[in-house]
Length: 283
Image 1 (cartoon, rainbow, N blue to C red):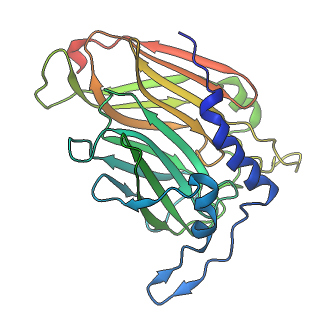
Image 2 (tube, rainbow, N blue to C red):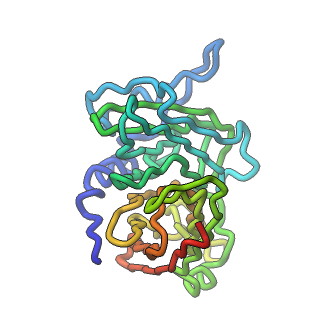
Image 3 (cartoon, rainbow, N blue to C red):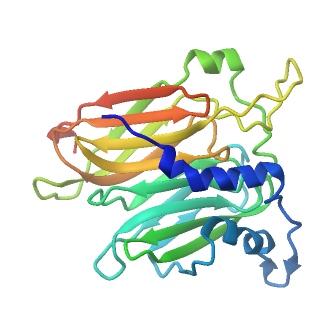
């Protein structure tokens, strides 16, 4: 099966272009007695969502991240979702780091019957910033949650591996399956967690080669699709804020004995693919 990321990238690419041209350059964050004012967000949200209203999270989505990051280049972010008859199916989540040079970190879309209720990844955070998750439900409504993270320099932090080492393992993937302890019903069984790891430098374009002292050109995973059989579990259009060696941990309603397939593409047009058999005994 071939996946075309072009349509899903269009709006995302516009926001990225504005960011690098300075149209979304971070503003100085004003302070108030209750904490930082969302100055950047107020000027940013129209570029991403237009005039569409954004409602409170209302329990539909929650976010966890460290208040002060140990490493600004790999800040763990944990998202949890509620999908029921009252809230409606979750269609997509947009992850935003207000003060990053390119604020839109990723847009995730979920399959109709995927049942994803948890997603974790790692982000670069370039300055003290709100990290926001905006969920879109099946009825088209947007719901937002946010958390404030103290971190700086994540987008320009040197890569952990040198470029030759990174390119030698480019696109290698690993999938971990964490068996379910909950009772399931056939033919759908709750897979407690899966973790996808992809070897890729995900260069931001703001990092300097420590040997040549030249900036390393941007080179990152910008398209990802995870399927089981012929159904979509999750797709992503990504930007420079996703950390080196992208890592995604998620749960979903798994079908036993159907393979998991991952298709990925990066900004240099390279495509990566892998497939893993998932047996009933592992769920």
